[in-house]
Length: 359
Image (tube, one colour):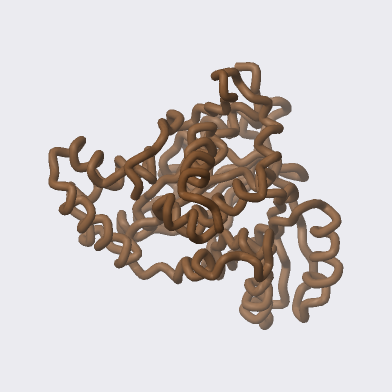
C-alpha cells in the first residue's frame, strides 16, 4: 500500500465535494473520465493494490493515478472495505428477501434494514416489490425465525417473502471485459478473484478481527497506521493480513455506482428453469459478462440472476438473443434496481446523497 492517501468519508455519509468543498450534484457520479474508469476497474480487481501497481496496469503516471484515485475515494464515488469471509463466523444460510412496503415507506424500511448486521445487500427496486435484500443467518436456517419477528416488525413492511439461496454460481465484478473488451491491461485481468475456500472461525484470533475491523472502515489503510492504532508491529499486521487473504478468509470490496462506469441498467431477474436443466442453464448464464451474480434458489426451480448492462437496449438484446434462447428457460420475472444501499455488508457511501442531495 502507498503511504500517501486521502481522508475517507465516514461510513454512510456521501462526501461528494467539489474542489472548493461544496457539494456536487450526484449526477456527477455518472461522468467519470476513461482514466477514472480504468482506475476503478483495477481497484475492483484488487482494492488494496498500490497506486504504482494501478498506474502500471492502466497506463497512467503514478502521480496522476494517485491523485485521481484519492479523489474518487474522498468524494464517495468509490469505497474500499475488507470484511471477513462468510464462513468466518461459522455455519450460515443465506436468504433472498422480497419486501412490499406501505406507500411512501420504502426508504424508511430500507434504512432500517441496512442497519442490521445480518443484511448483506439491500436495494430499492421497481415492480411488484419495493425492496430486495439478502439476509445471512448465522448458525443456519434454524435460526431464521429468531430474526423474523424483529425484521418483519419494521414499521412500513406490508409483505415479506424469503427464499433460501442453495448455491452461488457466480459473483463477479468483471468491469474490464464489459467496458474495454480485450483492451484491458493483462496485469489487471490477472487479478481475477478465485473461488473462495471454506473459512472457519478458528482461522481468526482477536488480533485478526481487530485488523479486519480497521480495514472495514477503510480498506486501503496502511499496515503501519493499523499497527499504530492497535499497538502492534507493522510486520505482524502485514503477515496476519496476508495469511487471512491467502486462506480466502477476507473479502476486499470496491464499491462504486454502476452508472458511474456507464452501466446504467441493473436488473434482478428470477429465471424459471426446467428442473432437469437447472445446473446446465446456470453454467451457461455464468459465462455472460453481463451476469454479475447468479445463484440457485429453493423455490420454483429458479435462478436469481443480477444483470448489469450499459442501458435498457442492451438488456433487451440480452433477454431476446441470449436468455430466451437457452434450452430449459421457461420464463422470468424482473425488477430494475433503482438504488443500492448496501453490498457485501457495507453501506454504499453515495445512496444518501442520491436520495437527498441537498442535505
